[in-house]
Length: 249
Image (cartoon, rainbow, N blue to C red; front, top):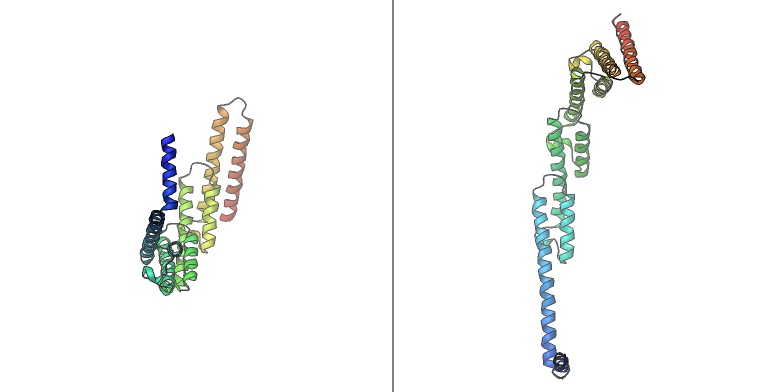
């Protein structure tokens, strides 16, 4: 312990009695800190350049990439010119990204087999951010409206298909199919159906549901609830059947 104390005292005395020793030690410390700062700056510059390359080949909205570029440039305390770009290019890259985003949603809309409402909405939003027109991405307002209509018709067909294959209550399937047709301003003929088929699918669904509940009732002693559900389904089937008869007349 005494030896360690002696060494410490000797070292401290060197700092006070030998200015050259103290100066050299300070120089080493400053150089080390300076090197650390330089390494960190290089890392930030590399990060900015990496995001710049990503922004130059956008798959969609470039907002995040541009934000990361600005953050890295600020951390590195350098200019956009230092990483090989400018405010003008950054603005152009934002627009380019919005157009890429609009094109991406347009392709989704062209390939979709059901409701296109959100796809078309995102196309319009991206175009608005880019201050561009549908022509900028190879489309038109007419096509966008057609895609919207086609999407609703496809959705109506989808729900009709579910109704045709369902073995019990078809209320939701039929309702969703009709709602989609209304949005498309289309008719039953547009989905190869008719009001009569829709009503018949409802009747068939209610009857199937009544059979299901009756089957459950047979398996239980305390079956009042199941019998009530069975009766309710039969009443709905009877009501819809009467409605179909009236429509036929």
